[in-house]
Length: 286
Image 1 (cartoon, rainbow, N blue to C red):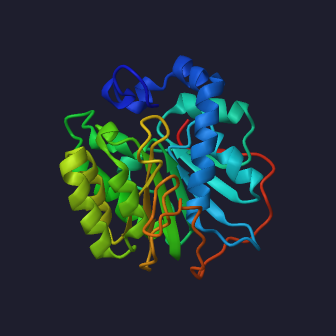
Image 2 (cartoon, rainbow, N blue to C red):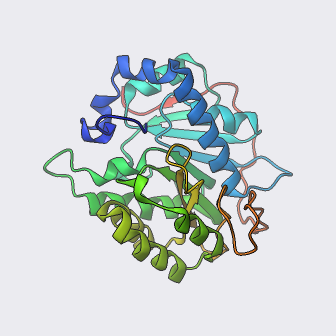
Image 3 (cartoon, rainbow, N blue to C red):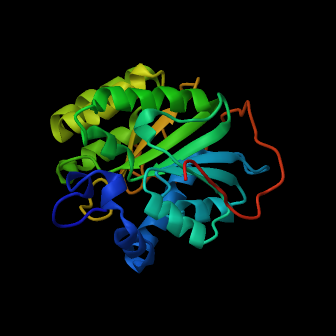
């Protein structure tokens, strides 16, 4: 979604912007598919899932199911939610393996407590910073999203939210070094929040503040922070634990070596068990 011109979230609400034509264009563009697949792979990696059993994951802003494809390839089960019916129609046509639900994340995550072993979201959360209707309050919608997401996740799990904050081209290598050095506690998240406040403005401040308010700990991981094209932002949130933040890719750490993928040993308290689904099903009105 990065590129020249206006950002998609500035051109209208997602349920209107991602109409049938845009949904098909997004799902048929080889470059977009490649980028989506790469970010999905990285997000799942950052979840630090156990390797000896499948997990049950939530994909927020799942779109046409491109991220879900990678999740399925890794042997996990998933449910995707999106506000765009056109995107979900494309996902159904593609016969994705996950179940789908038409829902507005700003109204909350409509699942029972402790249901998921992790959550990924690619290029979706920043949409909540916009007030597309007079009744929309970005802080309230963000808090509703994060508080219900926190409830829906199992203790010890993580949510990895990739996003494109405003003015992200201003971030330098120092940010990636910070991602290597910071721990994952609430204090560390606050430090990262305060640092980014002056660089990225109110958008990231708003997102991280509401995540903290909802009970999450964690912080921001910035991969390839010194590259304008390759730089990616991942908000890494922990549920009920205060683990160390994953190391950022392409950033020099204190020992002078390029950071590699982080490995975690967080204990899992809830694991979804059950037969895999042969084909996704669409939940919701209509």
